[in-house]
Amino acid sequence: AEVRRTRQITKSELRTLKKRVAQLRKKGFDVWTEDELEREGWTLAPLPPAAADAATPSMAQAADWDCGLACVQMALLSLDVPPPACSLKQLRARLSSDSVWTADLVYLLASYGIQCEYLTSELSAGASSAEKAGSAFYASSLEADAARVDALFARAASEEGVSIRCCKLGANELWNALRDDDQLAIVLVDGRMLYARAGRPPDGDFEGHYVLLVGLDDTTDSFRVKDPARSDRTAVVAAKRLADARA
Image (cartoon, rainbow, N blue to C red; front, side):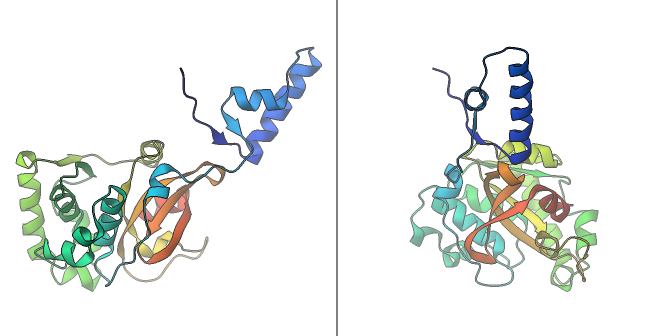
């Protein structure tokens, strides 16, 4: 049997559907809004959280540098890794540096037997990374980090469970990837931009911050986000806002 994915209809889409139904009825067709909603896979009722969101606990980072580890911890807990085995202390013990890059997170997940794919615009700690090192946090260890991260990239092809591809994931591709409600994505953003008010550019340098995407909110064109800096709830971040924070 065919399984149809149900989506909560937005106000604008509902107005469009009602207008279409009214036009068809004027032409003599026996159609009803409720039937068209069901036929097209819409619902008026609020939908429950996506499976990944419901299965993923919110966890807080413990320091200003371990947001990526907290995202890995949440992902592991959602995959039924026992909490004592993936505490922040346990995760930190598996790393060689407090300066955590995305490649470190990929190898960290692989060490638990988790297969994931890392998409990056550069297969090295290259020019764009150097630009982001305008922050003192990055600049102080950039040279040592670059050598270590480049070595991780070089090893990737021979490491089981580690997949790294040179690919810039656009906003639409990211949205479509999260359409499957069992998908998670750890994303590096500029922390200043994620909750910035419209028309008020943030001050200061790039602030690298990892968040975990756990689903979509179709009614507001937003991502459902587990932010280790805001561990009390799932945040809802507009797709445009997330795209700006990833740029």
